[in-house]
Image 1 (cartoon, one colour):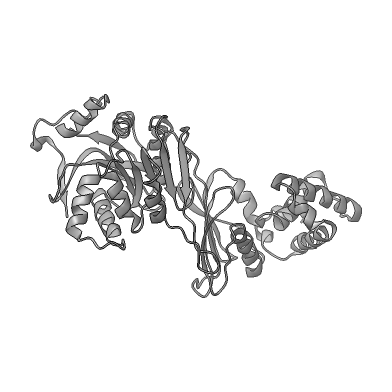
Image 2 (cartoon, rainbow, N blue to C red; image 1 turned 30 degrees about the horizontal axis):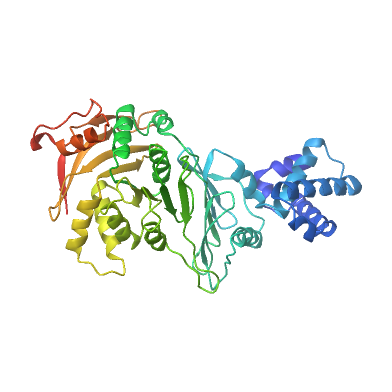
Length: 445
């Protein structure tokens, strides 16, 4: 088998065969000939170019004789090992991959188009996988070892990274990389089937009329993608503060302040939580607050902000339905260090939340808005949700896709009046309910 074939062969990628030894050998020779101090002063692109140039000279001087394609492939593999993330480097450059999952050195999975597939790649050894993990976490001044076996981090290019190693992981060192989501417009999401024009116009009116919107969904349903798209509807003259665990939102307005939480350092000090940032944002004169995900006591601060003059705020929450989202918010708010009775939290949610947009990821990988629900309860009333849009899914068809249709229902008079006062039109597909009987209402407790 030629070197080119062996370099491209999935079976040989992770084995310490002849090409594996060759990559390791040339990597060692490369490190011997470069000035590490000089390299550290170069930008990433210049550093890679310098390594490729030096390695090219080494191969020309010492052999072997290779074709142009084989030579470039060998250089790429050696430099990826020396500078990048080894066999993961091409995966990070593949725009079609949204998630990379490494379950020990022998099992690498990726998600493409909403579907998970295993790749015929592997790390040469557990040590090589650990070296890659250590290289990732060191970029954010973190460490991973038996005393600190779990790490959340973010690559300089924006990808979210989670690492868990033995003894907590019984399958070996596990690495999960979620790609930095591309910024989609709502029109693009229509093209993907996530929503339709009627829902777009309704959501545009709700955001511009400063309704407080909660985007709800399970993991991987596209909550951040939709939140980013919805934030594009905020008028450009407003002061927007975004708060995230890992900065992913890409707002295009001119007056945006981006805040990102910080984990504790190796001594366990210096942590800045989402809750700290939400509290601080209230002192920064925001017109809108956008929280990437509420997952703890910051829920209480967010709810208080929404109900005390910061209308038009947006946030995401991890929940499987609109009803679950309300229960989740109530539970998270109770985790605050401020002891507030559940009854008071209930009233706070009734006062703060205006709209819940529920997202679902279907078996074919498609992500859709499956419900837009309006809050129609007040004070101590039981939570009352009014469904104004819904996706009715049909069983999977022979082409492996799930099709369906969007259905619309009348909106409460109170919502219509608020849109009217904000000069926002109500799409005709919805209409206004003349009586409570015309509302698609349900209670949640």
